[in-house]
Image: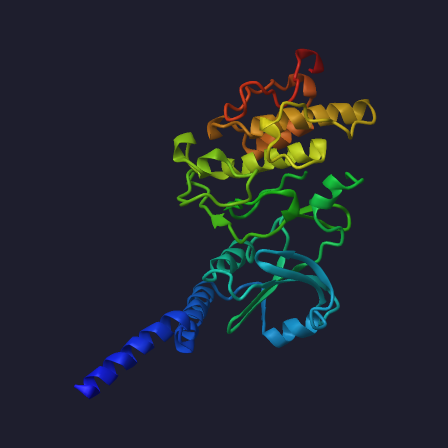
Length: 327
């Protein structure tokens, strides 16, 4: 009986310790399974155009992470240099960041994508628990700083894949040395065959203030490329008035168009406003496709119709005074 009592006490103590201090082998097993999932994915999709580096290479190319460019929930971004002297931006993913889904999304969506407005993935690192993504360097940073600071500087090329980004916002639009915009951060992205109009996505994803209504509730419609059009429209509104727009549609005020300096500016700003309000229509079917958005921006203001007000906004508030005289 004494032996049984001791055994029960030992088992009880083991259970308590296991809850309070998870065994190292369990943590290792979780990390190992994540690593294995990613490795299997890379084998299935390889060989990839992007080069693979080990963590010591990443350490060298960033000069021991000396020059930090930014920080996000995913980890930090550092300036680096490849052996051929090309300057790069290295995104080091946090070791506690999910199950590797973001890493897989990023590598899968842009490693084989060639587009003038998508940032190029030059390489990646998967070295045990260490994960990093190496991009071409964008010397002018992100669009974000040009909206909210005292600076304010579209090309339509066909992309060889249809990618639903789900996080279009100023922070994720990087600017090359000639101010050519490049979309970055494909951690939430989903590749969708062009023949399929509706994507199967579970749960809202993205940044509050830019997420399309259908990502919260399918009552508003199916999730598709029109969900990114909504985010784009919200971003354009920020470009127009140069301030955060998360609560704009609930505020009883106009957009405060502070960037108008002459008649050409005024026409472009009003055109951007009309187009953006079309993009944020509650019903995805009422939003224009991106090729139509480009046509509207490049066309005449006089031919643009004023869109209906999105019904999610406050009934007593108009996003902007779009009188007929402005057209």
